[in-house]
Length: 290
Image 1 (tube, one colour):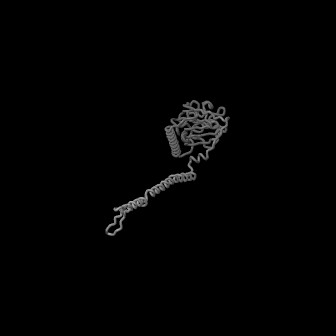
Image 2 (cartoon, rainbow, N blue to C red):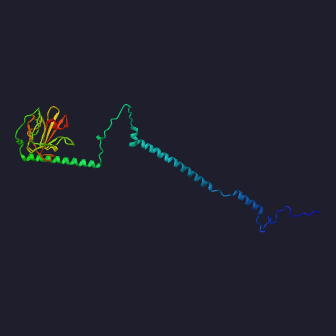
């Protein structure tokens, strides 16, 4: 007789145990299956991927901004520069070139013709020029005052009215009445003939009076005569009121034109006598045998 086990192929007692209260019973196998299914199909969605996507988009936008903004600024800056070019750019655009042939040779420069001027020397020259102008203004004021105080335009009496010329010219002062203290040179344009105040002065050559003034700059009372042959003479520092001629008057060689004085920029009675040939200053001593 074969023994049949009633428990064979039947569910585990523990797994198929039915509660006595009538509730449905869930076996352990079902619980494990349900747990596996839950783990496999009920995983929560990851939140990392959206965050990474946002970060990627932000990085791309930042890269675009970093490239586009400088490029726009450079383009805008170039446009502004083209509308408002600088002086340097204009100079480069307008620059010209000069081609010099091999046959052209520059002149040699002499060192003696050029000199450097320092700021101190410039100030000294300005001060000297200002002092010169002040002296000339004072001389003119003195001449005007002397003329006004005299109350007359009648020339002073200077004795002999003329002397005989020799060879068409005369010594502007009487022989033996003077000595020469200096002549042309070192910025001095004439011969200084020292003589007592009031000594008569004569026209060295015939000509036309172009200047006759009681205050001719630093020359003081002065007369200038054009001789019609490219030469002219000037007589300076004469005595106030001693002029015997007027501008435009024709004079003869040896005719009295004034008297020695100490007017203008002068430091003692003397005649400053200038002689020019075609405008160039020359020493009058050898020309007139002074």
